[in-house]
Image 1 (cartoon, rainbow, N blue to C red):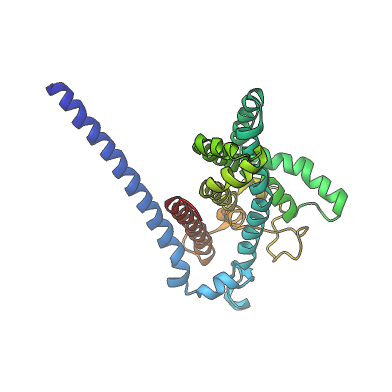
Image 2: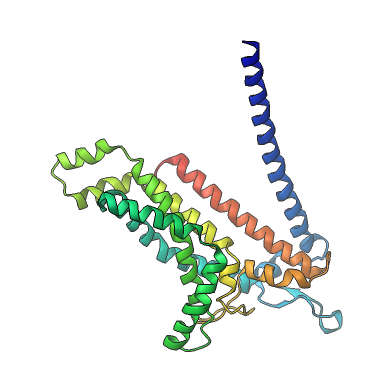
Length: 295
């Protein structure tokens, strides 16, 4: 009895220790990124307005030429554009595939599709970028002209990358719906399509929205695959065929060329802080949707 009590207390202590470690780690990361990112505004005296709404990115300009400028508007627009366009493609496609897996596909189809989706999720992002660089960019160049490195290439690659996230969460949500609701719909004379459209999907709406938001969060934070196909031009895009640069690609491309404590380095940390705040925003949306249960 004493031995069992000892194991219970030891297990409780270990779990509490691990939970405390995760909380401390999260707070430490937020504090470090926040202190580094805010130094742009407090130490280097760059205004928040200039950082968010100026497209002039000249962090290495000398004081004699007017001083450095760290406007990140072009990168913010690039990140938001590829994220929204990729979600616009993947959200309906992912939900439809999830409905097919759960409600329509025969047993052998489910056994074939589920591993295929999991395999798609397990492919490294650099492989997606390499495929986009080798196949997608030349196709866009031959069909639409230009160099092929463009916003279109970026959101097409991203739409494939976030598809497994949306399908997996949507599938779990649809499977969690009470089977009695489906039987009740059939008992009222509804067809399978009417049951899916008017009973199952509305009941699973909060879970489907969560799936889309999680896919959007992954798209906003993706760096390597997008960087390989978007051209990385520090200008505001004028069409989906324009080359662009995102916040993540700006950080990865410039972080090796900056000096610790310089305004250029601080501006990159500010972009990291902006990405962190966007992730926090997406998490808050998911928690709000889950708590309400329906929108």
